[in-house]
Every structure is written in structure tokens, then in C-alpha cells.
Image (cartoon, rainbow, N blue to C red; front, top):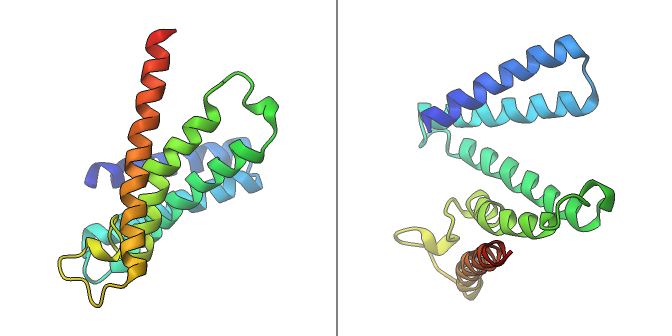
Length: 156
């Protein structure tokens, strides 16, 4: 986690310097603000995870939003952006299953397995079992899609 925090902080600093030289656009400001929020969230988590329990959830919310935006963009975005890459929609689905879904579960419940991922969940309900099954199925679908892509790449 230290490596990721320092790396993201350095990248954010360099991008802020780059944009201050090349000119700030709305997208550049949003990118630097999102990277700064993620860096601060990681740093607060490293300082005291129990006190700043919400900081890692901010980071996982940023991850979920980014991956979900990528999924929506690849599904409904302009096709000329993705014509050079036949697997862009499949890659977006795999990224959502591998990063997005666990990030959403962690953001909501503090565990990538949902409420049942804790040692002693308080009053588990049928919905908690559904969330756990969704997490397990998402991981298996990700592994299956990865296997399909690997076999397709091998056969080419």
C-alpha cells in the first residue's frame, strides 16, 4: 500500500506540473482532483485505518466509478474509438468483474465479499447471501472470460 500511495502521489504531482505547462482543461482538472482524492484516501488509510475507515471506501468508490464509466463507454460510446481493438468491450467487462464489482462491495460493506465477508456478520439476511453469491459468480465469470481470451489468443 505504501508503494501504491507514493506512486500515485508522484504521478499526481507530475501530472499537475504537466497540465500547468500545457494548460488546464476540465478533464485535466477532474483527473488531478480524482488522483488527489485517491492519494489522500490511501494516505489516511495508512496513517490510521480504524479512525479513517471511510478513506479506503473513497478509494474503492473512485475505482468502481472509473471502471463502470469504462464499461458504459465501451458499450454505448463511439465505436471509432475502439475500432482498432476488437476486445475492448470484453476487456471492460473483465475489468468490471475483477476491479469494479469487488470495489463496489468494499465501498458498501467494507469487504469484497459483502456483509458476509466479515468474521461475525450482524444479522445476515437473504440479501447478504445474494450479494455473496454475486461476488462468487463474478469471480468465476471473470476467470472464464480470461480463459476464453487466453485460448482465443493461443489459437490465433
